[in-house]
Length: 523
Image (tube, rainbow, N blue to C red; front, side, top):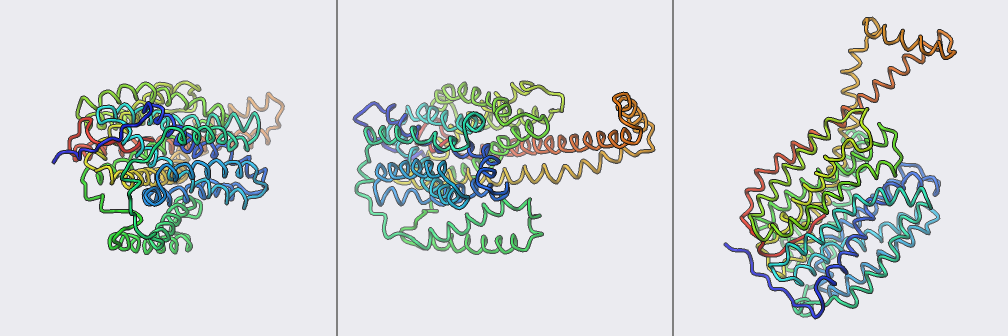
């Protein structure tokens, strides 16, 4: 079987102007998923909310975003892709202003939900437009340029968010979307056109039951992942009930979509082996990449004492790796078996995860420079060829629906990955503390010698013998906590390496694709 020969709709303008227009919208949306995370403590303080309540600023966005993602294809067919894209950008930009102007927690949660709804469709719609704008031989390079924006955005987000928050206010983390959104609306209005099959589409009656069930199970999943570790997972009664609702609504959603003549989300696209395997791989890689994006800034801030801005600068070279990878990968996708590029990317990312596992509390800000750069290069080697290969056997009419599902799988994988790495950090810290505490028994000569040395030093600084003893044991306890926390991070990095190595055999279950067919998305 050969890849479906998709056609491209020759634009009346330079296709790279269209690429710039859709990349602006997607870059803005992806940037916002990470830029707000840095500002959470400031948002909580400004709105008189607790840190736990402030995390709903992220959750409300993610839930709304995830619900709209797979439904974006139906809305674009019903209202026109260009018109729906412009509406989503307008909604995202207007709600960004509302977020910045919020005076209460309820107001910002409502605005963030609207912002997530507006942002959910931006990635799949932008990808569909790109795929049909460029001829097959140029799609690899087009998707590489597109991916460059959305790979760099999560790296730039914490740095830019930290700088805006420290220099001006957390509100500017949202206000910054306004000029970008206005420019994106201008570019898309001027250069983007709908293809004939969109203009003549008949998507059928709106599947309200499908959307409702989708919202319920995705909402339950996101809430469980966000609050699971905090509330001891299935030890909490409410989480068990939420999990039951999740399972029932998910099964009902599957039954509804498979039985409906014109479903909101066409799950039959999973009959294509490459698409099904590609969604599995992007879900696993999403868990690894989002886990890394979460862990590294936390490591620098929690254990090294860095500010949010300094931590953002320390991880920012990942964008350099992506910049170096994209042109090369865009060229190679049309020349060699894409599976080799994907497997290389997974192996490189796994190797850098092993490199991160050698961290210690004596490293400097740039000690991890090369692993950070190579992790960005490795992610570029995965995203573009995996997108190309995943979508290679689909027709144009299937791309919009498939892009929404593909991005949804990446986002779900990322949410699961973030939840897992945070759980491992918390639980393995206790495990390693118990192991390390066994070597700090007060009767051991090494411990007595260390305590005596600290007492002597503190006594020379003017502390009384009793105070010096108490402070000496306090310092040992602090060191024990720091080392326990460090080893929990090491465990996380090693698990990420195992996940990426395990993906390599799955890669070769994909059908061979050498720069043919469409490309479905990178992030």
